[in-house]
Image 1 (tube, one colour):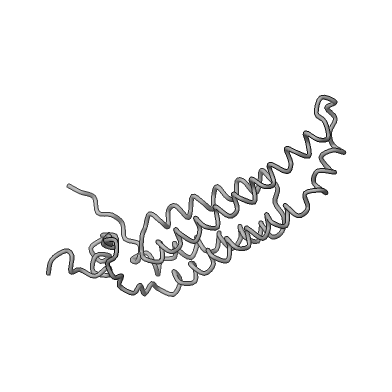
Image 2 (cartoon, rainbow, N blue to C red; image 1 turned 180 degrees about the vertical axis):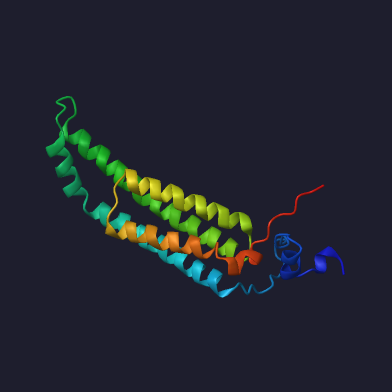
Length: 172
């Protein structure tokens, strides 16, 4: 049997990642362990909830602008500048939420195929997402998204799925 005839499960047992796929080649059906399937669904849900949370923040733009205007003690900053800056920030956060949701789905899909690096990237994305939510605007919905993503990443590190994410063997 040549290397190209190995199944992804056989490669995983040797500590290798799934075989690369050529463009247009037919893919083997993936059958990940149940916790990995659950994690994939949680990643998608987390991304959708994150978009909804920052969408809600965007709809409350006028309330946020009004509060910023009330708190402004610097006469050099006009109300229009505050409104413009807040609007730009809120739209940037909303677009960022969409980007994070797409990245969550993409790397969760790759992790579902047994790609260890995708699991690592998802871990980093959760950390970055949490930092942004702690520093910038967050609401109960975005915090719920963070909780769901923490659960999703924790599931991917359960002992029962460690063999599904093989370590790359050290070369001699």
